[in-house]
Structures are given as structure tokens and as C-alpha cells.
Length: 125
Image (cartoon, rainbow, N blue to C red; front, side):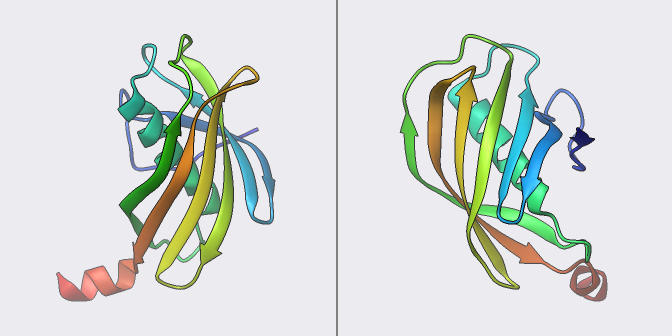
């Protein structure tokens, strides 16, 4: 079990541990300070995409959530996200996610992330 590296701090850091990582698939443990709202679960899914962070330290921005399907409300503070890369290039990443509480799917959908190079940002400053 490996800690997810994120700039977020408590109480807004929900993605805690990388449980499984294979090629384009990852499982991430989520922990919330209270039973999460729908928005908190979506933020947890977005943070979980850090499982696919690259070593060249690009900054990622969520630009789109789509095909979101809610199946049930959360009843616990701990859950798991399954993340799969659907598409990736130098500028963007599309991931499919599913959040489960025990074996029950709560929400699933897609997240589009656009990257900015840290070096490019330093030049612009």
C-alpha cells in the first residue's frame, strides 16, 4: 500500500492509498472526514487519477466530468475507487472511474484531465 502524492491537505484530501496499480488500471482507497456528498465522491475520484501521475511533474486540471451515474448514497467514510485509463497523450488523460462501498457501486463516470508542464508554468511566471 503506497500513499497517493497530492498537493491537497486535510480536510480536502480524500484519496489516501494506492492499493493496486497495473498498466492502465488502479485501485485507490478513499477516506472522508464524514459520510461524503456526491461532490466529495467526485473530488475523490478526481484525486484518485493521481495514481497515473508522471515523473515529469505535470500539473493536471479537471476540465470535464461526463457520463456520471449515481446508483446509491454513501453510508460510510471509507470506500474504494477503481480507475482505468481510457485515453492518454502529452496534453490530456481520460479516465473511467467507479466508486464502491464494500461491493456496492455508488457512482461511476469519466474524467477528462488536461496537463500543463511545470517547466512551462515557470517560464510564464
